[in-house]
Length: 620
Image (cartoon, rainbow, N blue to C red; front, side, top):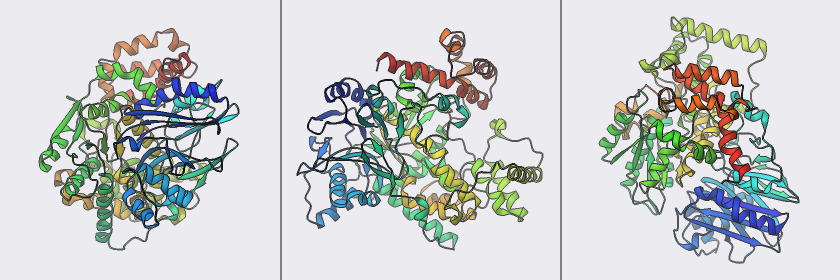
């Protein structure tokens, strides 16, 4: 896990100086252990890398890495979890290795198989590969875009990097994408596109590779989930067993590490399942498995109903694993906000600081890698706004539709009345859902079915496909890359194993919403490793800091001063009147949604102040 940088063409001397003094230092948080910059004047090529040591901690694992014959060079960010199996296949073809990590395996696989190697990898990556013999530059990104990769054309050249801030120094006159920055209603819509908050910068698409020719990037997909849907057993019990086997194997692969690993434990089903299966796998030693994995960290918000530390503590006690609560305060989040906005470099529904503080504490405790539970909600139907789609799959089966609504009602704790809709009974709610569907069809508001999704089993699967590949999950994958890499921590996500993703997409809605539970097939798959109170706990929070309490407490003076500042009142990216009105409402309200609404209206200003102006001033 690292930061990567590549520059091809342009003013070689100038670009080399920019890479050394401005671009690569901006990526140092991603790889705090080592930095290396290689200048190839003959090819007018610059390759840079900031390293986070995880596999093969020796100097042999340094990047940029070059093939033994010197014909290929690689900068790469990520991990290939099945690198031992890939290495064995290459050794069987007579290829020898000098190092013990996955980077050399990545490079050797590309040299041997070309872009076909990407379909063989089980992992996450963003990579730039240069063929010195043929003067060809290749880019590649993992199937679901867990690792970021940006690129841009510059005067007479081309640049790519792990983050936008690494590209900006090479652009003579970059401009803010005003349309994107102002459209805060579309915060979860742009990550799966090439559009970025900087007009000149493009996002390389997930599941693709490309050869860069004359600064033109023509992406070639090597992975489409819809082309890899497996045959699903008819019996539910067999489906449960299949999910269990894949999840166990996914965790085993992701426990390979030469440094301590752990878990960011929320107390909910997904992260709890991850830690419980890690505990199970940890008792069965396997090659390159991390020796130190018994490290669980939980965000703690004392006095808030969002605090899930009691559930996390219960699981750790059941597994015999030390429990590490991470106390998050509004004061700490506010103090870190300027630096965290700079590192985050995007806009979202919540401030990045409390999330980053968790991974900062994890790193300070000596844990470098976490296995986290991201992806399960989008794959198996954990969000109400997704699984209510199953109402339409139930069709004329009114009892089944009402059971889905009952499942929806049971996930909200008493303190979250603000999230509930004021329907008197389930029949009224059901009727309104159908009326809304009919009205949307008449008005043409229902998005056309994405090509290929017709083969998915039902409406819920199609909704989850969009959440997984287009909206919610791509945004969360981006967010957690920034949250963790801000302090040099790598997140691995067992639920995002491509085999498990394909299986989840192929499962029918009756396996996901069942017997009053969301994510039913997943719950039953991991139940043998968890206390029933966690495996079958219906109430769902998600990791949500108490923003409403913070705004009315330690953030209040800062927010009030901000609204009266000249910078705020002259910011062209926000509607000052609406922003002030929303803020004052949040400052007087205990409602979580009011705080979120206020943040969304002011975040373009904070991005301009702490990201854009920092870049323009050259402070970072």
